[in-house]
Length: 441
Image (cartoon, rainbow, N blue to C red):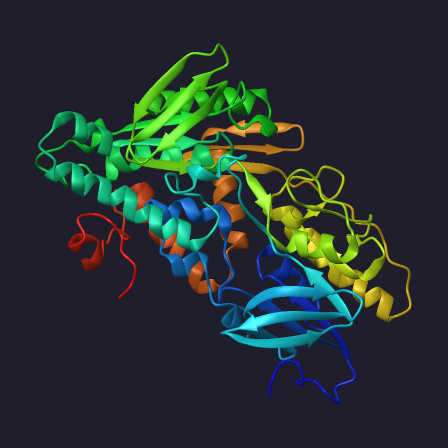
């Protein structure tokens, strides 16, 4: 039975959710006990805890611990069906979503639609940088980057030329937000602690980590005090910080950076990590074409105060895909807006007036190194061990499932108290192709 015909005879209100990130998952959870039928459409089979992608990339956590299967997460939601496919078209007038499911076209009709497509990496108009710098938005990004990072040390161990060896052991992180700061800190932790005494021809502590930020401070949205604490800690760890600096060119061999004074510098580096910006997924364009909706400069859809699409009150856009009141593209916005959309649908079914979306800012956190993090909660800015404990509690709370929480705690104990990194395997294909990933046979 196709998804197009499934549900015939079922008179319950049909809610279709596109995307099962934080927005989609929290919408589905909010509908669990309601008399509705739910269909989730996603191009992957997992719910991704994006804030911890950098820990997969640096070998602390496995991919399964931050990316549980959607079907398993929602196994107790008996009214939920999961469709693994690519959304090709949204017909707003016909109230239908056209999906490519493993090469087979299918049409799924809805009574209400929640679009939670998330965001992708933005290279700010320099799409030619994409082949040279890894993004940090998907599981594929993190796994590819993990191979690059650990492979760089293996290649350096085998490299006789000193200059080439230093290029292999140089890592450039572009973007001084939470992702960039956490990645830079973990790269230094990895080289200083986890890889000690692992090699005979190189000293991993010689690895160079450069953090490039286009504004005048790190973690700009978290306040001046947090920014100073972060810069001080990273500098003490050995991270080179370049503020007011833009990437002007990039290729496989390295990065060219330009300061606000116009000074240029070439940094030979094998591994480049792009953590500088995001752009809404292509679903925003599909909605804009069908509804003539307005998009902001990041491709996000401008929505009504209740997160609905103007002119289409049965369609909601949530999370990183919506533009509303200059809200940031963070997980907490996605969680709250997804749940709000679900509650609004239920209110309308029951004949009640919908309410506008009100975001509750619960703060922002960033881990710098083991036992050190920074946090901004309202007007309060803290750092050090207190910040790290807050970071630990928040991330354990939002990890999905007991097994993932227990597993993450175990890995963090090994990595932070000790020096171990479980996830360091390089495949035989990687070795066979001289350190280059090949397409599967």
